[in-house]
Image 1 (tube, rainbow, N blue to C red):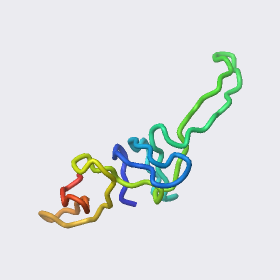
Image 2: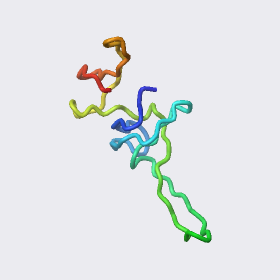
Image 3: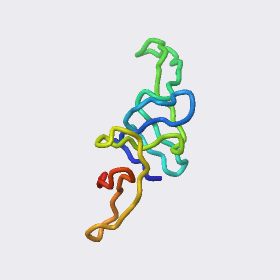
Image 4: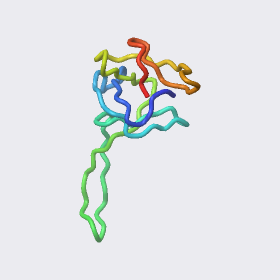
Amino acid sequence: MQIKKNDTVVVIAGKDKGKTGTVLKAIPKKNKVVVEGVNMQTKHAKATRTSASEIKHIEGPIDASNVMFYDKKAKQATRLGVEIRDGKKVRVSKKTGAVVD
């Protein structure tokens, strides 16, 4: 999985197709990511002694195959490749050839 936390991504499939957001959490074992403002889910929290009952809207995980890295230089979605530069693996934008990391 080449998408990491704090990457800007575009949703390319599903009900939120076309939305852009930053990755809040990456879950590589399940191949899922949590993107800010995408796949909003409603959670009902019961009242406790310290807090009142409320309805929370939180982001749910979506499959990593449904998002694409957003290149800010090209201002569009792009695929990522991996190259070895100076003895280190770096992620590279396929459209511009620029190093992402």
